[in-house]
Image (cartoon, rainbow, N blue to C red; front, side, top):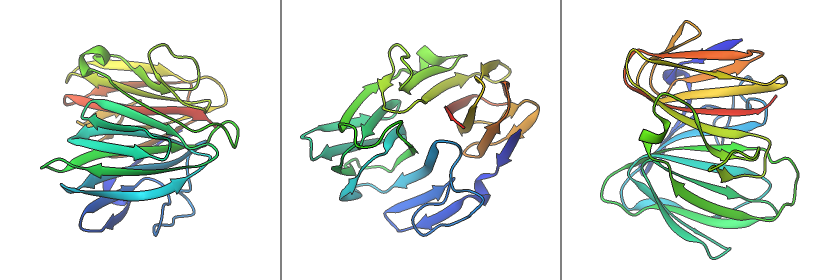
Length: 232
């Protein structure tokens, strides 16, 4: 099963400093048919205005992955971590027993990012944070694990039986990805148009993948892809 969810159908909330689209029910947006996808609980598509952001707030028992598409985000948390994650980079936070953090766009231009929440494999784990760059050239034509709790070499560690992957495809090229039994996927093209198993999808559309052993993705335009492989 593959279901393309057009960008225009996503939940929306514009707070002035934050223009957010919600792939799944979140905050004031509630759709009982979109409460998550397997262990994936949140996928937000955020545009954060310059010199603004999220003040300190708490989380617990959630794996939070931030994929920066344009601009940069600056992170601070109650564990003493501070870091700036720029376009092409990824940061992860395991909220575990509880952590407070703030995320600000301290740049002079808007920052765009995906924030993805995945349910952890166990509750009350030790909180953690990390970030690193992932050059797009290294994922040209193939999926590369960016964050993983499944032992993928080079990926940022998370405390969930899931992996977040990225790929870039030139127009006219293709790649494939196979899912193990009992797993689901959710794919979003950050840029570009694609065909996935013959169905067309556009930039920022969501694609829910279930009970599908393998997907084949063809790039109609130059495309940047983010895929989560998670427990069903």
